Image (tube, rainbow, N blue to C red; front, side, top):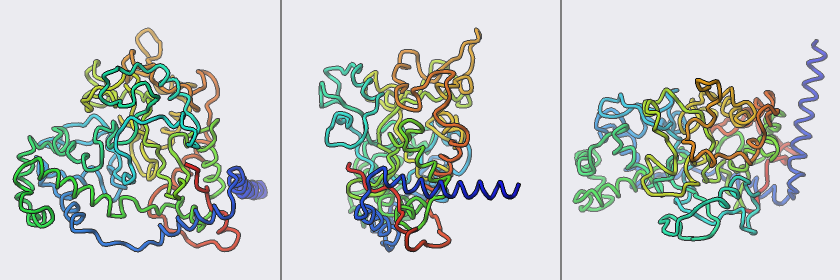
Length: 466
């Protein structure tokens, strides 16, 4: 038995070394390109801390201030816990807020980490049609664009008649165009911090212990009107998130791997290969995992939107109404009109720190990372595991979307391109390996030792041509 286990361990270790070699060779990585990626990653890891500007320090005061909520007990940090990668530390599908902290939200709280490079929300030309982009075309996007009925008066689309996709913005639906717009949503939402109006929120800021700092940073007119005063406060919050490195430290095991300072285990490396394989996990089609052409670290999102058709979360109060549907880009929280082809689409989040989340996807229906990966590969092949049955025994597939918008669900890109009864793109061991790789994306990794010689040269993916 011991001999068998020893031989198995040797085979796994050997496979890992071979996989890492093949991983680099398959991308045609030159020594110079690999070295450039390593140097860039090492520079991020070794960069000294930079003191926060006065505006960012002010933003930090605002971020942790529970007085800015109607209950007086909820701050930004209540849901965006700095000890849990600025995401909830509990396992609630959605957080509780309101005047008495008893009202349930309608969406899971996303992390605030790694938002610093998020583009402003826009409809832009699709990269699948751009010969200068190295990214493979998404089959679902091409089909959606071909079938999209973009109205001539569509206020969101300045590129009439062109193949466009929504990209960027904050929140699950991108409704906050830039980071400085994001804070007003939860501050005024009756299910969250529940301020009744902007004037009352401004009054709370004027009475805060840091009111003098607001005047010092923004000038004596800061409290004259909500239009200017709140915009200034939101800008300070955004500066805090941009400047404080805890929001984007780039110091996970994967970052040490990019710097050539650690090796991935055989299982982690196998998980990465499955993550990239367009016929297996195909995760990298949306969760980009290569440094870009400027050698910036991957954020593991393309900032675009997808319709994944999560099962309806019947624990959400809003879903007690059978006619209520959260359709992301089409509302209910987004108020501007969009295209029918965008209904049911939610923004692709970063996968950094995903392993320490307790709930997954926009409606918090999934409660383990293994199940999140499993859903991707079983939604089409084993839908009976995910969707309820109707009274007549048929499956209520895509039950959290109205029938008219179920055609927007991605069934063309792997792993969604398989049919019911076929084998999922990943088996159970492969799911475990993908999860092990995803765990390398957790911040604040501490290596036990640093490799030298050949081990240090076997760093991770080289820069893409994007």
